[in-house]
Image (tube, rainbow, N blue to C red; front, top):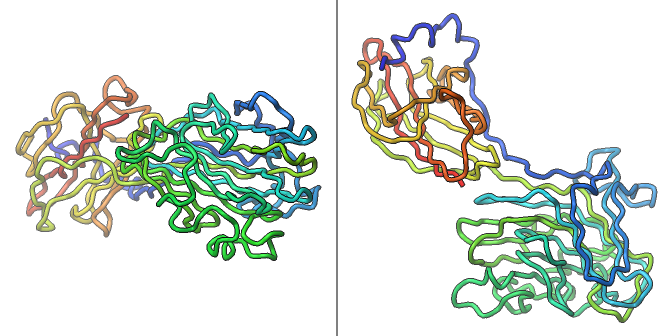
Length: 425
């Protein structure tokens, strides 16, 4: 094997100088529905068996006099409109599951919600937003308790003694805990906020005005966010970026995300009331992944080059960015990869250590100059790893990565960073 400085065709300054630069870390958007078109085909609708409501995609809420959702672009004023228990005076529940399964170590769901409320004191209508579901049962807090994964439910009129509650599947109950499904309002995950709109936290969160009833998001927009940390078993619920509930769970909340509406009791028919959703987004933020291994030799900076990775270990997310730092300035470099780790000191006259064995993949099309920062970054397409022939990363694969770079130490040579191992799911 030859060192990079001897491969003039691969690292020609004249041919590659224009490729200098770095990529920036990006989150991976798994679902993005602005409801500006009819996306009903992207959802599976599950009801409680006694449907008495409606679902309207691409519903023009601006025409109804509702202001633009907080995360909408000017002119984008359509959403998903749901109703429940319109005429029958019976319990009624609807859940719409997006057909894209979500699997990631860490992900967030964000959606804008508007609960239109004009009549019926104590409607007992609850909007609900969920994650990690099987998609087979409707979500409902009471009578009966139903659902899978986790979801948060909330009312817009403050007419329920439990205006804010969250559900955790019994299969996700941590060892030693007895509470599951609809968690009691004194559960530690409620952070002392309770579940009633009269609580000081909710009164401050949704004052009246602009809310119709203080402590409830009635006739106003609110942005709901759910953060799922599958590595540490923590789920967090936010309204308008205010942490509302945060709890532990066992196993994982991977699966289908959902939007829905339920009238959990039959006492009041609620024609004319509805819940509106807009700007559903599920994304995997760029986060550190992988395990560093293998010692790197020092370069002309006096220390070794260090590799790092951000993204997702879920191969299907196709989210990986590699960065190498502490390299000499103004030198060319590219990343290499393989599926076997090892150790070869000074291959081809290099001053560094090769920590990958077997067939090597070389990211030659993404050669970079270290510039004035002594660092480079690339975004890796996991569907096209540059071995021969090109392959896609599969769940269960383990891949090893290093950076290979030029140096003058004191004469022209090459060196390697340490390695990083990434186990994909």
